[in-house]
Length: 321
Ligand code: NAD
Image (cartoon, rainbow, N blue to C red):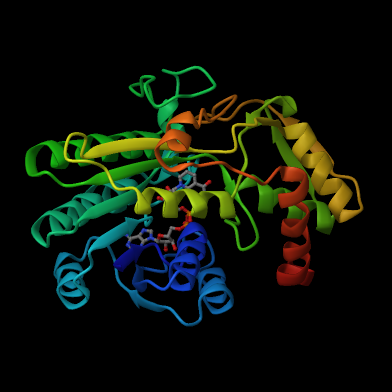
């Protein structure tokens, strides 16, 4: 296959590009290397994970540049992972979400439609379940009560892709990722924030008094799901589909921190705080739909997946941990 992967310098993107290249596909990535978090991490990540990849510096909102790239590459499949991520940041920076997640997304839809892309696989999020659903979240539950603008843009993406599928026959698959972690992960998310703080002896903020639960999912299980969805495109009858990709094992924050403490060999200094606006108390994926469609089965418990993250933080950040 010939693919364009957006967000290719991102955490999930670089891991996905690696897996696609290893499987023998032709891949061109794009990323705007924005400074939502340190862009040096993105450059180092690409150098470490996929130094052989062709990744262009390009913003999703640059329609002409995007169109020229599609014309040059002529992708048969597109994996769209670029987005303004983060729940808390969306409370202060709404326009970044509209630009990348709505305008950027419609630019991708338009090009997929007009350039005859056979299948678009795009990132949605567990955050779409918000206040409408109860865990374990299954794809047929409602998603009309998001708790943040970030979640609202991801739910909007699903409606937009559905519309393109209905109107123009675009084949599209939305994947709702559940709290992804691994080496080269996002420095704004709990796995890295906590690991670095524990290693450095800094206090950590533990929200909802540690009673929050997250369905932490290892990046290798997410990449396996992306490749699974790619290999099993949607049908003419149901051109748009959504799937949960999660570990279906919610982990209490206290336990999660305990695994980090054991790996770091030192105790965490916990500062208990109330729930933050936009956060969800508990997430848990029902993954039966993805299992039935393409055999999705996550295989990495946090006891095995998290210690290498702590070790990677120690190696990569060193004194800056
Ligand atoms: P990430 O921030 O590491 O990767 C996103 C990449 O997209 C970044 O490298 C960024 O520079 C790029 N990007 C952002 N806006 C862009 C734009 N306008 N033009 C071009 N490039 C742009 O995040 P990630 O964790 O790898 O997330 C990948 C996708 O998965 C995102 O769509 C995110 O919303 C979604 N997601 C992630 C998680 C998670 O736990 N990591 C959970 C649910 C959904």
